[in-house]
Amino acid sequence: MPRKIAKKAQKAKGKKAPGAKRPKTIKVRILKSVHDDLEGYLIERISKPGQRHSLSSTLLPELLYSVSPATKGLAYNAGYTLGMKLSMRHNMAKSITPLINALENAGFSRILYHPHKRDLIIEATHEDCDSNAKKNLHAFEAGLIAGYLTESTGKSVSVAERQCTHNRRSFCQFVIEYSPQLASMEPFEGVREMVGALEEEIRKGEMKSRASDEYQLLQMLPLSRGELGSEISKLLYAVGGMLVEDGIALDERGAKSMRELLGLKKIELTRKKGAIQTVRLDYKIVNSMKGYADITSALVVGMLHSTYKRMPERSSRLNSDGSYTMELRIA
Ligand SMILES: [Zn+2]
Ligand SMILES: [Zn+2]
Image 1 (cartoon, rainbow, N blue to C red):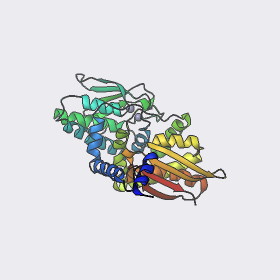
Image 2 (cartoon, rainbow, N blue to C red):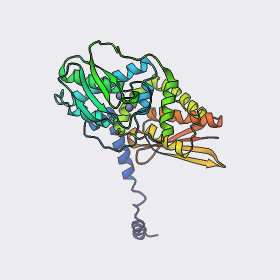
Image 3 (cartoon, protein in one colour):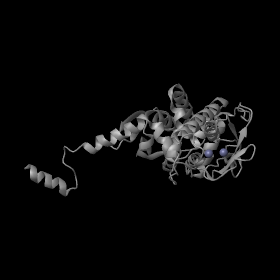
Image 4 (cartoon, rainbow, N blue to C red):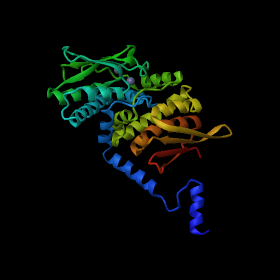
C-alpha cells in the first residue's frame, strides 16, 4: 500500500501511524519522575483540598499498624515524619490549613481544631471508617498532627488519640500528651483481632472510604519498605488464609471488597469450570510500585492458596499508561 493511502487508512480508523510510539514513552517518563520524588509529590497532593469519592480504604494499613506495640510505634513515627515534612513544605506553616487538608484527604470530616484548650487539639469524624476494631486505630494521624505542630510551633509536642470511630465513638479525639512515651498504647492484641475486624467490614460489603489515593499510599509506604515489607507480606498472606477459613470467598463480591481494601483499579477473575484460573490485579498509576504490589497481592495469594491448596504463579507487567498489573495464575 502506498504510504499516503496507508496514512489515510490509519486516520480513518482513528489510529496513529505505526511509528508513533511517543505518547507511551512520555507517560512512562512522567511516572518515573513522579516516583523519583514520589513522597514529595504525594505530600504536595495531600496538602491541597482533597478529591472526594475515591474508593480507597485506609482500613488495611490502620489494622496492620495495630497488631503490636512495635507496629503502632512505627505508624506514629511515620506519621510524625510526614507531618514535619508537610509543615516544612509550607515554610514552617503558621497556618493549620495544610494539616486540615491532609486530614480531609485521610477521610476525616467535620474537623474541629481547638488551639486554645490546654490539651485537646482536634476532634474529627471518620464516618466511613468505623470498623468494630474495638481499639483506637489512628496512630498514624496522631503522629501526623504531632509532627506538624512540632515543626510549625518549634515546641516538641506528642499527640495521642483518646477516642476513635473504630472504637464505638462518633468522632476521633486527638489530644496533646505530656508524657513523651506512647503512654496510651494499648496492649498487644494480635492478628486475630485484625482479621475479625476485616471480616466484619467485608461482610458488610462496603469498604468505601473518602480517603484519597495519595493519602492511602503515604500511609502504606512505611509498611512496604525493606525487611518490614517482607514481614508484612507474610502477615498478609496468613491473613488471606484466615479470611478463607472463616468463610470469606474470593468470588466476585469478595473481589470487589479486595479492590476497595487494597486500593486497586480493578480485580478480574477468570474461571474454568467454576474454579478460578487467574486473578488479575490492576493497580492505579499512583500506587503502581513493586513494594506496594508485593504486600497487597500477598493477601490475595493467601486467599488463593487456602482455597485451592496450590501456590499461584505470579507475573507482573508495566502497562503503557504507567500502571502496574499483576497476574496470579493457578497452574
Ligand atoms: Zn480509620
Ligand atoms: Zn480514630
